[in-house]
Each structure stands twice: as structure tokens, then as C-alpha cells.
Amino acid sequence: MKAILTCTHCRAQHQISEAKILGKKGKFFCMSCHSENGFDFKSAITQISSAFSYNLNFSGDLPTEPIVGWFEGKKYGELNLYWIEDKLEIIPSVDGSPKKELSISILGLSYPRKIKGFRFDVVPSDSGNSQRQVLGLRNFSTNSSYRLSLTVNEETESFVTGLIYLALPDPDKTYLYGSYKAEKIHIINFLDDGSYDKNLPSYVSNFVSAKAYSLAGSILYLQECFTRLTEEEKSQLFELLIESWITDFSVESHKFSFTEENVIFNFILSEKKMMESLVFFLGNHILPSNSVWAMIEAKTKNHPSLDFAFLPVFKKRFPEEIQKIFGNKEQANADLLEKDPSLAIQSDDHISLSALLDSGLSVNYVVEDEKTNPFGFNILHESFYGLGARCGLLLLKRGADPNFLDKNGETPLFKICQNNEMSLKDKVLLLDAILPLHASIDHQSNSGMTALHWCSMFCEPTIAKKLIKSGANIHLSDNQGFAALHEACRYGNTSVLALLLEAGGDAKLLGKNGKSGRDFATQELETAELEGDEEKQAKFQRILALLEVYGG
Image (tube, rainbow, N blue to C red; front, side, top):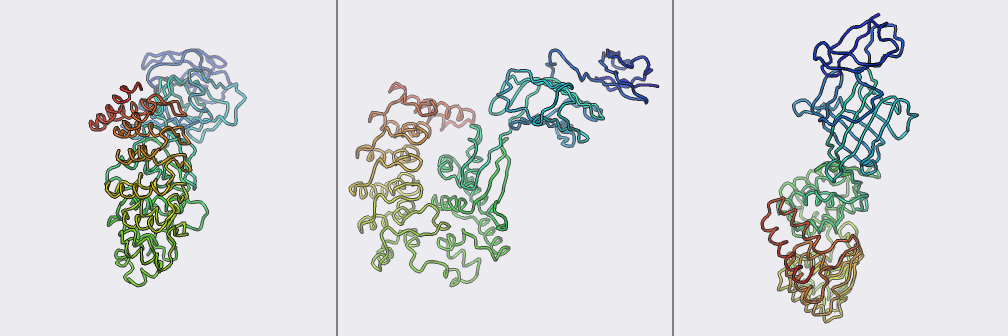
């Protein structure tokens, strides 16, 4: 009987008498490429067969040359590796095109940091581990009969490097070895309440972060990155929100996923949370584009039986556009509240609002509808958050509660500091009107933030100066342990930072994560340098210089 020995390097095959190698292992010399190859031919075989052209009992130092592999008898020098939490996926490529049908997945490796610097060996004599598997070609799956040696040398947010040797006794004798660099793939799961199971990697762009937060309805985090987006990017996110709006109400959970920048985002979409994002976009004066109107028309016509939560909002704010879609102005307006102060506030029509108040409308009126008012704003919040300065002044004069809380635990004072659209003159008017009415300057919201925190992130120094002069506590920390000073450093608000430091702010103050204002500014400066953003670089260089003056 004849046996066939296959060269590890060039795959040339050599016939040899089975009697000469039966029960033996050793090396043979390839006549084609002149390489030495190991073989193991211990078992009795009654027909022409291939001896292992790799060493299933490999021992010794792992090869350090760039990784290569043999799949279905062909050599591949271009392998793509992806480390996805506890799984390492290996996909060969030809001319840059991945051959996913030849991929191998190694499961049960735990996270890279847990095996970093250690040798992780699996040999044929292992008893097996239900959590550890190799899924390979020809549906190969086993817990014990393969050889795997793996090390992790370095792990960052973006990649994992190390050495690997893998041999599979599948029909094609698949194996690979060498040094690898695997891209890190992160999986982040958002629940229907907007929460998520892990933080986004620091390298994720503002746009992708805002995309995830918009779909999840995580408004606090969306607010942080929203101001760094271009107007075009904001419009794109608005379109995505409407495009992704839930249409299948036949199931309890509405799953949605997208992958960008080596992060897999998984969502359980919630119409309530999406409504919060919609209100946020409209509150920041992002207007629907023609494509958004086309989406609204398509969704309402393709699903006429569905009661979309976004429709009442659009009908209130854009009755003429809705009339064009539905072709019946009376019907379009029939769904509006008979007495709706929101319409007056949006146009800052204080005369109409005054008439509504005279007819018995409460000065603290709240629309009790989670779909159209997901944050629980009262009409004073609405006036302060939009462009309703005259309406806001009227409500305060009529006795509106200056400390009324919305569902985020925020007072109307917060809305002045969050408002990026209202003129500084109008904001000063509102601030001068509300502070003498015993507005709580140091009130902390559900997230532990104060109005001064928001001021440090986005607002003009004039507003911050008034709050500080009125006795605002500059040392209060939010639930993450960050004071207003940290926010000023993180967002590059030099003018407000100067006011805080002059008022006695600690330039070396550390948050719960052990980071100081200098740490935040340095991180932002490094990002700006990588992006080549000279304006941003100058902004954070000024922050660092100012901190140095005050010993930070």
C-alpha cells in the first residue's frame, strides 16, 4: 500500500510505501522545494492516505514570521483576523477580497486581557471544554482533537497582537501559524430604555456616537457630541431617525443593528426613546429636509393603520407641510389640541398665550402625553428651551413655578444654559427675571448636573458669570464625579474656565475616574492633532495654558 506525504510549504505530494512509515513519526525531505517536513503516521491505514503535513503535537517556540495558512490545500499569505470579545475569527483573502466561506472561528478564548502574556495551549489529549470550540471548514467542530497555541502580546482598544499555531485534523488538514494583528471588534448593546452595557471606545467619531445615541434615545450623551457635528451631519441623523422608525408593532422587541468603525451596535428600539430624540432634534432647530418629508409620507401611506408617535409633533409644528402630504388642512389640524400653548410658544406669540392663560390655562401646564412630550416639559420649560423669550417672561410674571422639574429632574434654569439657539440678549432677560424668584441655582438633576455644569459645556461666559455672582456652588460634582470645571476643560470653554478658576476652582480636581481637567484637555488636544484641526488645537492649548497658570 502507498501513503502520500504532502509538503507543508509547497503542497507537493510524495508517494511512499506505507510499510516504511507505519507507526513512525519524523521528517521527510521535499524533492520540489527542498524543505524538511514533519510527519506522524502511527495509525494503521488500509488505503492510500495522506500523512499529516503539519505537527498536531507541535511543541516549542511559536513561529514569529508573519502569519500564513493553508485552507483546502492552498496557501494564503493574506489573513484577516478579528478579535470579537471571546472569539478570534480568521478569514483568508485573495487580492484584498475576503473568502468568508473559508473562515475559522476560535471560541471560548475569554477576553484578550485575561490571556495577555500567557501561552494558551490546547492539545489532542485535552479532555475538552464546552466553552472552547474551533469552528472551521467542512463544518469541522470539536472541543479536543486539534492543536492550538496562542499568545497575546499587546491589546489596545483597536487591535490585539500575538503569536498563533493552529492545526485541524479536518479532511483538508487546515493549519496556520505566525505573528498576527487582529482588529478589535466591540459589541455594544442598547436596551429599550436607552441604557447600554459598555461604553463606546474612545476612538469612535462624534458622528457615529451621535448616531448610536440618537437611535437609543440617550439624550444626555447625545447632547455631549451634538455640538461637534456639522449641520449636514445633524440633518443626516434626523433622516436616519425617521427612516429607522418602528413599523412592525406585531412583536414586543424591535431589534436593529449597524456596524461602523469596528463597533457592532445592537439596539432594542423603543418608540418612546426615539420620540425623545426627535424632540431633541426639533428643540435644537434641525428642520426636516425634503427627504424626511418623503419618508414621513411613505411610512404613513404604507402603514395607514399605524398610529405613529411622530405625527402629532409634526402636525403641531409643521401644519402646512402635513397639509401638503394629507391634502386636507382641516383633517390635519383636527388632531391638534383645541387649546395648545405649544403653538404660541414656538412662534413666541405672547399675546395668544396670554389669551389662553386668561381662559383658564395653568401657568405650569404640562401636556400629559409621553409621545408628544417625552421629557415632561411644562410650558415654561418649552419657552426657555426654544425661542420663546417673550412667552417665558409672561409666564414668570403670571406666577409660573421657577423650580418646576421635568422628567430629567431639570428646572427651567437648565434650559437657558442648554439653549444654543436663543440670543444672548434674550437669555440674559430670562435669567434676570427668574433669579429673583428664588430659582434654585444649585439644584442637581437626575444625573447630578447643575445649571453651571451645562453652562461650562455650551454657554456664554455672561450666563456663567451671573450664576457665579448669584452664589452658584462651583464645586458640586455630578453622578460621575465631574465638576463644572471638568466640563469646561473637556469642551474647551476657556472663558468659563477662567471664571471658575477666578472663583476658587481647583485646577487639580480629580473626577471619580481619576482624571483631572488637564487630562481631558490633553486627550482632546491629541485628537485635534490627529484630525489636523488647527482651530480645535488652539482652543485646547489655551485651556492647558490657563490651567498651568493656576497650578493645574
